[in-house]
Length: 88
Image (cartoon, rainbow, N blue to C red; front, side, top):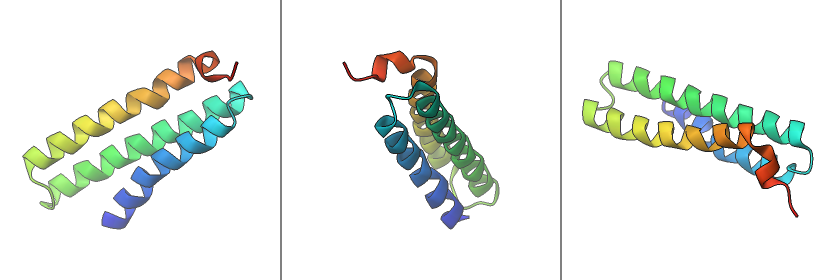
């Protein structure tokens, strides 16, 4: 489970980075941001499993979930407003 959380959480950053480099192509940019959002959601699922299995306390689960909900808002905003990220 630790490995899955590490992979999905790192994939959020990697997809945002890849997408940002492709921002001249709005559809590709949005696709990578969608991937980042999906990885963020996957991380939340794994955190829920970790809590349910007793690997995380309720307090730690709440803290980490809040961070990932906030993190997920970033790619979501980028998906809906790709024009804000096109270089001038």
